[in-house]
Length: 89
Image (cartoon, rainbow, N blue to C red; front, side, top):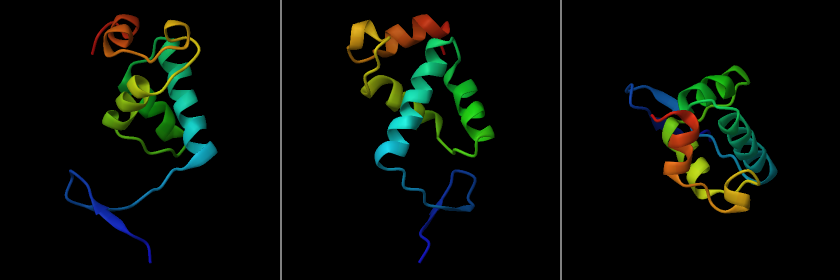
C-alpha cells in the first residue's frame, strides 16, 4: 500500500519517508548550499532538480535543528545566523 497525503494544493501526493544516511546526506547538502549563500527557496529548487522534494519548512527546520561544521564552530545554527548569511528571508 502506497500512503498518500493531501498537499496544500488539494491534490494527493505520495508520502515520502527519508531515513538514515539519505536524510543526513540531504541535510548536509542543504547546509552546504546555505553556506554558499543560497536562500531556502533556492535550496528547494536545487534539490527539486535532483528529484528531492523538500518543503520550505522542512529545509528551514534542518538548517536550524541540525549541526554542521561551518555553523558557529559546530554549534546549532540559529535562524538569526542564517538570516544574516542569506541576507534575510
